[in-house]
Image (cartoon, rainbow, N blue to C red; front, side, top):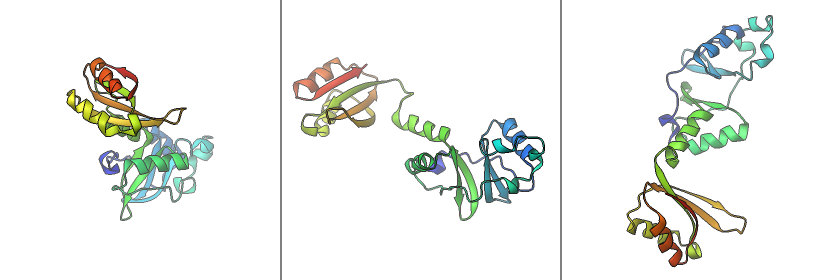
Length: 197
């Protein structure tokens, strides 16, 4: 999944000559926490709700944005993957990333946008069933073949390692009865940790 498919491209921006007071007003009016600073369509900096906290006194609110903006914020290209955007947000402990292509601001993506993308990818909001299984000898292909034989349609697969060092696969399926499938998987030596119909 590419950032360009999840970014906000209908941007609210501010120019460097505006004041902190202007920025606070714009952010409150539009219920946003990230405000790109632009000249034309060129990104010059970024102000955020947290970066402006130091400028809330009446005298500091008169300062121009150019004096308080984050210069050279971390940015990404529209073709960047959602995974990479999430890694950068986590690495730099930031809430959003401006998206720039050939020096021009194209959009912004926030933690909320990335969370929405992952929720859709994982099918969490869809009505679904789930089976959690440790495949016999790590043979996930056999588990997936068995699910297919039972008419299961896979939405997503996640994986974690339990305390015993076993790989547990969380297989989300379109809604279906799972008791028979779970019994069949167990009879073939796969360890069914749990299932939710």
